[in-house]
Length: 473
Ligand SMILES: [Zn+2]
Image (cartoon, rainbow, N blue to C red; front, side, top):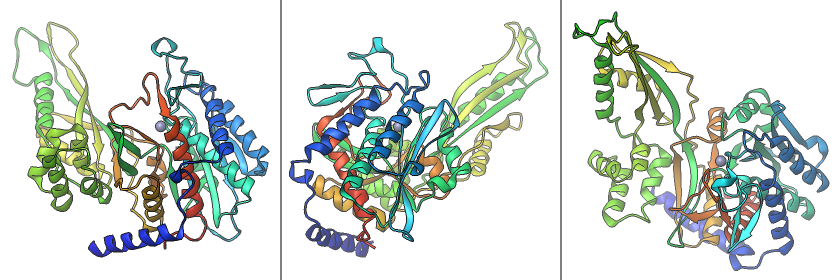
């Protein structure tokens, strides 16, 4: 471990010497690049791609036109979908022939519905105000889609030839079903197959009171699986109760699930998160975080779980009752009682093992278990040196002294499905925002003007570095 750290530090120092400080790290930025990034973001925001409006074909087409106009062969720019209402863009920027396996660059075109009356401005109008760009999708994640496309256009203008193909994939339904990426990885693997993927829809930077404190890299996501718990009885008249009651069986079982804590289970990503992620915490909490990272100490884990539901969810598989249904008449003994229990499973824990533990906790054979849907396993992505090295070195140039913190999402993004088929995926949004004022999916969604263009520049440099044959081995 200490050997690895020393090596990291040394190579970071060497790379700082080899690579001059990127333009924006020293302030000024090419005004044409900035204008292009702004124009594309504006165009995307003003195409309503919420599920109810269904505008992803328009958005995909608009971006495809820009890429073809910039010189990408039309055959390499495809608007595809499993259903004409949901169109994804897949654009391949050719590298030297016989090069390494491609790098996949990810974002999604769809946004969560926004109601005009809830907002201070029209959510589907791009508004610049007081150092912010406002509009639905400015932070989730049309900013990512726009910067990826803008960077391809810049590379083309410069005549940049990467040492491998670069592929942009912008999906159409990440916020709802995730069907687009699932369809692509299963039916059109050839279009998007890659050595690894970088996702603009994960990670990001945190400001605390305006000061950058963390650069997050999403390397894992929890796995989603719901169970239905059901008890059936023969019923009868409610004036003559019997001990064998469907509602009481189920209620006792659920109460035991409420009291049950899954064991602490860390992976490479969450261990690194707890080791480095304590910047915004009190000394005591930060010490517990380091202790958990080192030894998995159950008492420290218990204290952290009490501090934050997020930490609790990172440390354990969680299962919680989310729906309940029982009985059929006020004056009858219940013949049926059922509940939905939703689990968010640590990515290296098997669903079978979770079910066994739940059954053990309930400890009542009258309660029958069945699974709702099928889980999509998603192994944590190994923190590969050839990827994390350049990600970290460049981040340190842009945001000096800010710790790079690997993180696991407790929800899910398209990255779940790319990891599922064996493409390691890293969420590296690189857009800094106040950690206590995230507006994704909410009203008055916005992205900082400086932060957006800075992230675009970071991605421009990062992808170039990763595909220039000079990435750290
Ligand atoms: Zn998103």
